[in-house]
Length: 432
Image 1 (cartoon, rainbow, N blue to C red):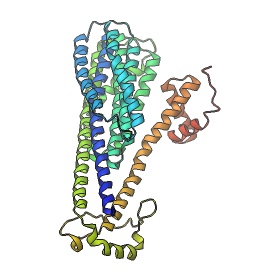
Image 2 (image 1 turned 180 degrees about the vertical axis):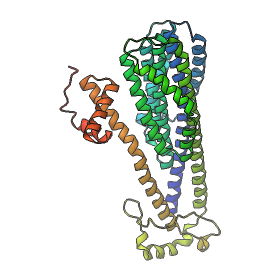
Image 3 (image 1 turned 135 degrees about the horizontal axis):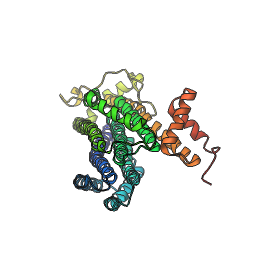
Image 4 (image 1 turned 45 degrees about the vertical axis):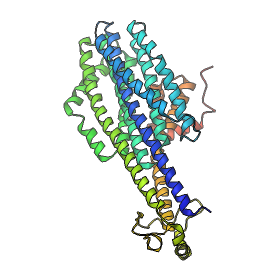
């Protein structure tokens, strides 16, 4: 007959397997981040190339395409390493659907590049195509963050996703501004889009700061020198305040691109640091779990059966409740030690089970807190999509509408999103 220790060991093995899956997911996220960074730069160079009617930036664009192809090859290798046969993969249905979408986009990427090379597409159409592909890649990161079962790793994944999303908005700002400067004429719609992108990236970076470690937060603050930010703000004002149709200095397009690129490259340094911390945490947790497994496996349950029985009935306050949780939350943390066997063990198997239950409950509580941020984002995105579909609004207009509603009603944006979704059946459908 299997003992409680058998199941405790099995639980620890499941924990190790989950952590190893998270480590693989973290590696996938890191490679995805590298490709996203490359595509963001390729998008900006493509806009400069199109804005100059092919007269400039052709060599730089071609070199960047080569870097992206290398990162894409690595990402496809990561996809190939995923277990697509097992139905037990956490969040597998959504994650694999996102990956399928990304692969479709990557297969179409050579065609996109050919359209740009032949000047068949406008800068805006090209930007939108890159935005869709990068959004698909970021959705893979989002699903990875949503599937994490360890709160510390989940926090880092949430921080990573929001930082990458903020960096993507910064990349879109670079591309949109490059196109405006390169064409030499201000456009009211593009100016409104720039303002939306600036606000969106700041919102994402705020969430990153909330969920990242103090070290990463400090690194981010130090990576933004005042002279770079001052130059960026100056050029932003030129772009966003010029009258519709006013002339812009086309010679400033490479200056704008270089200024934005400097900021984005420094963001990449922070992103790489975050990637390293993510892998380090995964490795440390796997090592600790394997150490615990060895300690559990060395225990001899039969020698402590009588003592455990007495302990079980003498300490009713420490019993595990029907949900697998313990009410003895104030007990000190326990680390199994192996100074002897049988009656000389320092801790009983019951105590190990109780400690495991306390730890899992603590992790579950923290994980709920972390996932609240992801759930809020899902609600806001669904509400925006609903407004876009029913009122034929752009994403910027839908977000602006919800933000204005939140300000007028003195409510949080997520509360407005919930209200919009609750009224889905009565919203006017203008698609007909």
